[in-house]
Length: 610
Image 1 (cartoon, rainbow, N blue to C red):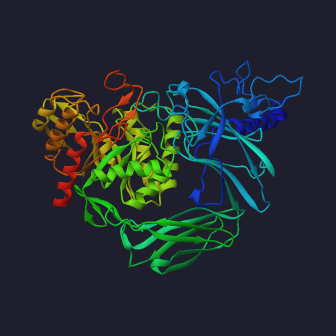
Image 2 (cartoon, one colour):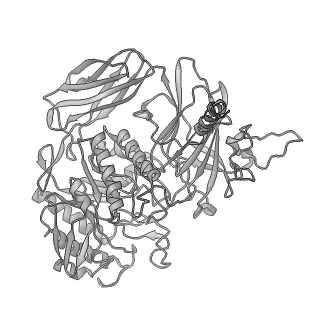
Image 3 (tube, rainbow, N blue to C red):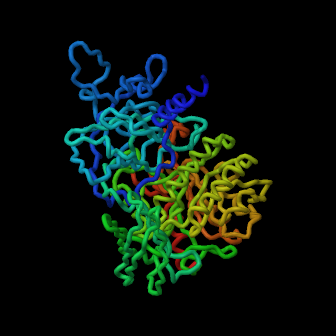
């Protein structure tokens, strides 16, 4: 009897799991914004749902897993008959702008953590010879996506893109998409409960309905070979055709045109010799038009070519010694509040970094907008890219590791063609333990398996004993840089004491200071010993730079941080008011005194060619 029942039972379990299991690591199409698409940005209706009554019945069972699959807000009943009881109506609800977080758009949602439902109507004309994908550039944090009342999938992770194939669910004419977004912080998620940035909820980046031919170019990589600047390497991956197919790769300016043949899996390897590459650098951010075409599809991209490596305690970009004159940045626009939403927002932030004299930025502490990376390519800024493995992750939980691995993988796959990205970071200020070392060691191995052409780093831990500071975090053995955060002069010691400190760094690797900083309220002036004043922050920078210049092998830094940013942890009502004031620029765009101190330091570094 058991044998007769077990197969139907397993089938039921499989069917249910296909609806309720979060989609982690789903492959997204490369260069999504260059594809044919309908842009679904703009006004979306929203419903605040702190009890998740639009998702769970009164027994706390999901409606979309019930026998009928009906009952949730995703049904979008707006014109019920007189006998139908409906306790919601999107048509009479207010709107939020997408992309955008809800916290900065509605005052009552400023501190809100919970569930919000989004809905948007759109018109489509699906063709029989095309695929259709619903693409989200980022949603924070957990999302459940429904098209025309039918669930298409779920996703976890607040900063990476994801997509769902909706070819069979799209209708000719009127359609609607509903997204349940939940930004509640949880212990076993990535990041975990405790962070020092605002937990912006919502559909924070672009939404597209992408269409492709049935056989299409899903992915590609075109970069210089790791140890051979005279050779381009990479691959092209076609999806939708099991037959071998011709693929053409062209770089007209380099007079390259080569024809490849895919294997049975749609994969073709790229190996192209070239001797006339104009190498990408911050001083010369050269990008080439790269064209890839198959029988039924084509894609164009702008790609720069450069090499990056370390030799002893030096960093070499295109075999030239490099000092990383950097700054850390968050994905936040202080002038209008909330996440960066447009190319103009991002150009403003990157423009401020260039004014500071930077050739390098740390995109902390999570995967930033793809447009940010493309702009860094365009204007010439090297990039440290990071995943939100931050502070105290659940190191022993396998699902937490899978989540971190997924976010890391998706970020690398999305940005692997960006010349600006020279460092993949696996985490920030994580306390040393056996479990942490295993967790992050696996992430480092994963990076190298995906992309061995860039450097791998993390913000390591330090130890202090009197005036002696030691860097010997065991994770450093697996990394390419001796990179670490230190807050001497703010969280420990006094600025005037900093030049007395001596550093012992137990790695024969380039030293990059990933964070240091002190708070100052713009416009508050006092003597240099008064904390929160611009003068005190300026003194801090002077003494920090004096101390750091004595470190053997110092090859760069990204002080914390370019601009003041929102944080629930920063509650002093006079000086902070929920702002982390370590920015060199205020939330109103005012440059503090320390901005010019660091700017002068970077100018001297440029003049000395160090």
